[in-house]
Length: 110
Length: 119
Image (cartoon, rainbow over all chains, first blue to last red; front, side, top):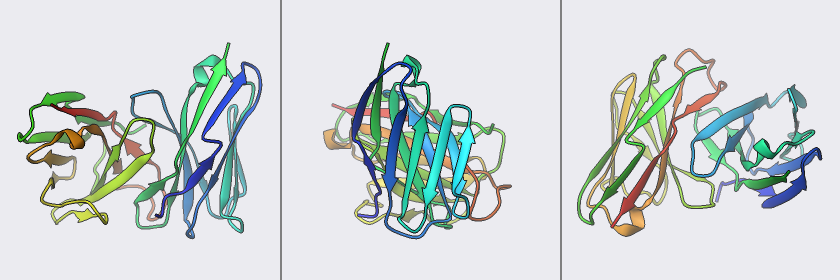
């Protein structure tokens, strides 16, 4: 399967703590994107990082990319209950289609 | 940002019937759209790439006669689940790539999804 893998599969933290999710993939990529999905809903784009970038920030989100290890991480700082959702990485290889990782289900406890 | 809509948002049908799901890019043109399928608590699996004016490209293991895709215009792609069975019940999500995005890059914009339940 080409699908990437994410770990942990599930993560439960207290409000205010940081949450880190990791994504590993198998093929060379042009870019990697992180998405959020609330239960039973559509996807919301969070951040895109290009293959020549190593780190990117957006608000409370910090994404890193290590192409030599074929891995990426998403850090959510000072988490809130509203951050409870599933988070997916998706890798783009230049053919415009994206392969999604297995996802991390994050639960932030108030 | 760009908006992609899907219709219907949910549908319940009987076994053996066909169901059509529409995916529209509302404020941009999309020569390429993608259809995904998602089972409960699982990831999105790419089913096919929908190309405007040409045949769709299906991923391995996806039956093209079962899941008919038509990309009739730069803003509309449809997925028809033919002769639906209970195992086709799933969440179907489409995405569209903005025509103006640089090649190889660019955010894909996702629709809100359609939940199909086949009785």
